[in-house]
Image: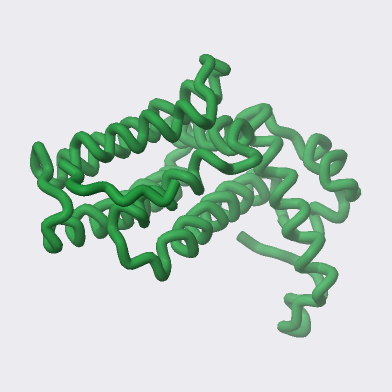
Length: 213
């Protein structure tokens, strides 16, 4: 992707340009959630970000480049939150609880679930988006696998199936709940957390739960 402007000529990105670029990316991610990759328009992004279309084109050469970058930005933000949540908590089950609360307690949960569902649907039609989807799944799998392996090593978990299958079950519940929320299927954040924590307890074979939630 070719980005244009003073930063290309000098190698220095002004602070204001960074702020405006992030505002545009956030607005583009919202447009993707509302309209999908194919139907989202630059005008939708410009109105939401309160910038001109020319300002958008200053940062992103094409419409597709903008939405690809918005997709990657949204994924990077999500992964960053997951990593921060999991850092520093020594107890494996408590760390899983914290990840669940991060997922289900997001004040923008509906938007996030809708965005993710749209991303997945768009990736089915646009091969260039698939690496981002895989990256999110790989990151979530690595976080949950690490928690499960540590719990098994300390004797706190006794999985009722293979560790790979247990992690897959948790991931399937996350995807299913996200889709239900995106489709306005009646799933509440509280129910989402209850289902995900219950699945984790069951498939991990959690012993002596010390819940901090």
